[in-house]
Amino acid sequence: MAQARAGSRTDRDPGTPRGRRRAAEIADAAAQVFARRGYHGASTQEIADLLGMRQASLYYYFPSKEAALEEVCRIGVEGFVEAAQAIAAGGSGPAEKLTALMIAHTRPVETRAGYVRVFLNERRHLPADSRRRIGRKSRRLERIFEAVLQEGVEAGLFREDTDPRLCTLAILGMLNGVPAWYGKEKRADVDRIVAAFARLTLDGVLAAPRQGGAG
Image (cartoon, rainbow, N blue to C red; front, top):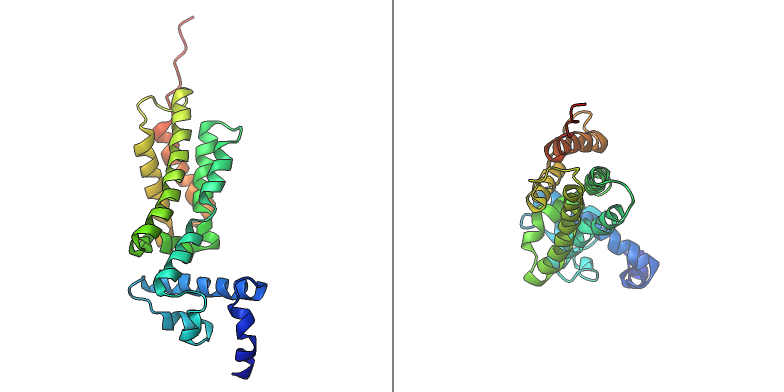
């Protein structure tokens, strides 16, 4: 106990490397507990137990369970928009961009599945202001998918009756379902999953080859 008290002040200071590491460890534990139990089924005691620390010590980092949920959701959505923007700005064609967007959107289930699952399933429990802040990121991501689909339509590569908005919602709905069953199917790694989904998507939106004239 004496050792824990001696290091506690440094641990609790978010401006120090040690404090940041501790906060990250707590966020990791919260993501695991929220993903397994759901927000309402989870308790701060479970988070503390996972780390072998006192429950009261959690409040030096997050003043409430709600604040911990917001941090987990923030990390869960982190990087999605930036990765999508980089892909959309690249020089590849719309079909290649769409596939790359799908890969980038699904890859985090390998590295931070708990965070992604909590973001998808538990963000509705956030306070209105937090939900709006996170929702703005989701909408930005949707617009990037829509723009790539529209680019394909205008280039004549995607079917002219493609509705970019509805297709975006369908694609993201399909991809966002992956964390619920990822790891339960044999040989279903991210590359195989996205390859299957990309084939389904592109088969639906690619324009049919134009028939050559007689001659």
